[in-house]
Length: 426
Image (cartoon, rainbow, N blue to C red; front, side, top):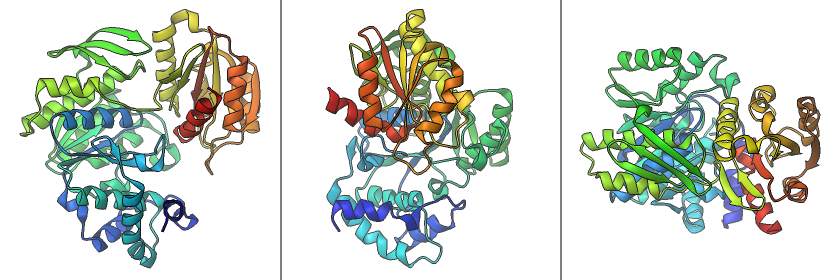
């Protein structure tokens, strides 16, 4: 197959949908010789901050000299980004070759795997063939029934910030959601948790006790003296001194703190990770699409926030970087999935809104831009329905003065479209 035929096969309608359970992934991996059983993992679940935390952990491990795999979902720039080693994406040729190897087994399954299950198996085969020392493995959704949870006890399970998202699948309360995320806890394993409200903490404590797992929490009191700029955030972190984090969202120092704590736990387990590796890993991390500045005059920000908690974090980032001067100066390019709680998402950012530009991401679950525009009108700011992402980017740039701010947000799924449209316009 060519690379285009390979991607068409992976995205084929026969793999579409979401089906709970690990049986299909286990069956497919068994047919491939169980490559996941020959790998070591840091397994990362959570509602927000998973990707950034994964990137920071992977960067530290790479700095320490480990051949480090990274599996993420969804991709931001291109499909190949989903599986990478030491920052290098899987090549087109490798993806074609692995898909040719796996398709015979997938096609023969009576209960067909979903696309995510197929991609998970592809990643496991890739990381095994490339002889990774360790793989940082991001959960797709939830944890307990996510296809990545076929792995045995990881070197470390990490659970980032918990919030309301995918409530139809994971449950209506934070306790329900936390319970699903806690499902990656394995008997006798090590678990590191971001923390949160007492009910959430209680869930992690209960599950860890039931499974005989060692539970740790990130200590955000170690973060001091934060200095914000559009090139990065400088913050103190005991005992490492000042660290310059090139990710600019106000929430990113906490994600970095989780990653640093993860590295410290791995070090106690025998991994050769120095203080210098930790600092250099954080200072060289790259993670696109999360409060990322694409350009200036006007400032153009690409942000992957796609749920209420993420929007609160975006509002905090806007305030941290622009203060009161940012109010009523942000043109938001918005595209969301149809199942999102729009009121809870928009309320935290409406104080900054000069206007909303609505678009429809290229995804089957996306809300029509006209429907989104109609719903946004009640928030009081002007709303312009532009339908397509490229039209929305051009409209926002035409509207903006040099002192205005453009922020494209609402879904990770349209990040590549926004980036391409901005690059073409620039």
